[in-house]
Length: 397
Image (tube, rainbow, N blue to C red):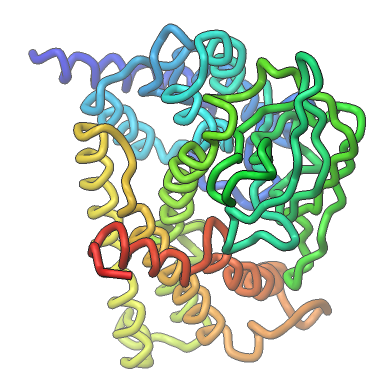
């Protein structure tokens, strides 16, 4: 028996013993997503049991070093773990910007003190993070940001504002881009800093979206005092870190392209049979059937491409500008999925409230509206096309 086979057997046994029954199914709504943090709530108590069990193995961050309470798994072992989790249809134990974005940055650029302070808490789901990048006047042109961090003794005083800050009103800490040298060119003089969202002088105001949700906030900083030790990397060299983190973020967002976000009963095929009709166990509308098949084929191919790219990136040193390709394709794929779903529902996909619509139909309307933001968040599609042209295709300016 090979070591990898033994690892699979041990992993399967452990998961069978520790994965609660209610966790072995697709979650019904976003409220069941486990974000962790100081103010975490668990509508399903078994979700907390699952988080604690996985964190005890370091499997919330399976490939992170064991020195920071990660799982220390090799790429091959992590592949086995993900396969065994999929076999159980197990839910993710923890969703975290600390895992998908900040953690990889700290592993590469953080001091040892910063790694020891923050990474174990991310693994255990004890701190919920948000991202302070975009500003009211600095969206696609992020490098023009104006939030200031002025060094006073052993601390920075931060003044300015951020916008589209996801879950800032619920987050415990923020990783933030600030301008530490206003006299430098816009790509210089930027620093990457971490601070507690309970610090005096922070005000996060939720923004109500067209979908009716308020996951984004406008966040204001008024003389927020932050220890100098919270600066990640060197002062005025944060743009390099910012670009690397954006690649991790785009990889995260691109993952929405190949995945089914609802339970199997809500798949496009089943919805089409329900709303359009079926004949001989096939969707009655042949054109619609072809559209769904093509979308599913594209999603499957994209998912396999992401897996291959992930394996290659781990062997070559991490993410690359190709993350812009995946972000562009993944978001357009997700938007196309919702366009097709709205088309399937017909008039039932246009409701906002009322007894003539089911809860599922009303949620689809909101999800379709929310999907419009996919081509904006994490860098607009136009920004991704520029990155692809310059850094991937090496086209001249």
